[in-house]
Amino acid sequence: MSESKGKADFWSSRRVCVTGGAGFLGSYVLEKLRERDAKDIFVPRIEDYNLVQPEVVQRMITDAHPDIIIHLAANVGGIGANRARPAEFFYDNLMMGTQLIHESWKMGVEKFVAIGTVCAYPKFTTVPFREEELWDGFPEETNAPYGLAKKMMLVQSQAYRQQYGFNSIFLIPVNLYGPRDNFNLETSHVIPALIRKCLEAQDRGDEEFVVWGDGTPTREFLYAGDAAEAIILAAEHYNASEPVNLGSGQEISIKDLAELIAQLTDFGGRLVWDTTKPNGQPRRALDISKAEELFGFRAKMPFEEGLRQTIEWYRENRLQVKVEG
Image 1 (cartoon, rainbow, N blue to C red):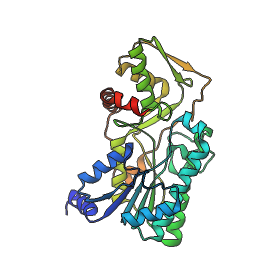
Image 2: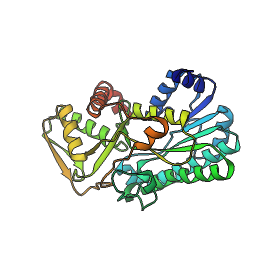
Image 3: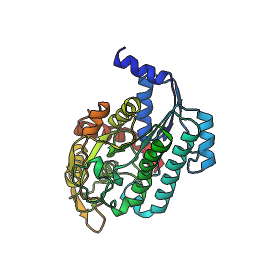
Image 4: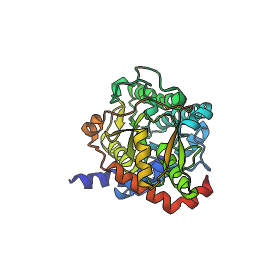
C-alpha cells in the first residue's frame, strides 16, 4: 500500500472533530484533511458550543460522535491581550482542555490531538528549546496563565494514558503566521500587528510607527500551512504522550523582523521602539528534531515567501478585516 493511499484510508474511514476549525489554524487543518479524503468532519462553532462548559462538551461529543478530536480552539492573543485578560485566558483554556480530554476518554474517542503553546516553556529556557526542559522553570510572566493552562493538557494526557490507556498526544507549535491570520490590533500576534501598522502608517503618510519593546527578543515562526501538515502527520503516525515541538528551525530578532516587514510592505519611515512596553520572553527557538524523527515533519515554507503571501492577503482583505476589528 502506498503512503498516500494509507493516509487517505486513515481519514476516509474516520469521523474527525476539529475544535477551532472555523479559526485561523483550523482553516488550514480542514484543507489538509480534505486533501486526504476526510469525508466526515465536524466543526463546533462557538455560537453553538461553548466548550468551557462541561455539559456543552458532552453534547458536542454526542453530536459529533468522533473517532478523532483535534483540539485547536483557544482563547488567545498577543502580549497586550495576555496582560489585560490573564484570568480569562487561564480559565477558558484550562476548562476547555480538561473537559474535552476527560469526556473524550469517557465517551470512547479513539484519539485526542492536543495543541499546546510555546508560551508553556520556562522564561529562560536554553535555546533551542528541548521538550525535556518544559518543566525547568516558570513561564514568562505576561503569558504564564495561558501557557500553564495549555500545559495542563500534557499532564492530563500522560495521566490518562498511564491509568486508562487513552491515546492522546500533545504538540507544541511556535508562533504561527500566514494568510487569514488575526489582524485585530487588540488581540493579534506580532507579525500581523506589524504588517497592519506598516500599511496604515503608509496610508497616512506617517514618517514613523511605534513597535513595543526594544527589538532584542528573538522568535521563531511557523507558517500555518506547515503547522497544519505537522498536526495531520502526528495524528496519523504518533501515538505517545511525550510532548513534541513544531517549528521551522529559524530564529529572528523582533528588530530584524520589523525591518523585514517594513521592507516587504515598502514602508520607508522609521521604527520607534517603545521600551516602556514589555519585551515578552527573551528568546524563543525550538529543537525540532523530534517531529521529523517521530512523524516525518519538516517545515517547507521559506520565511520571506510566507511573509509576502501574508502581506498580499492582508492587502486584498484589509477592508473586511477593519470592519471586524
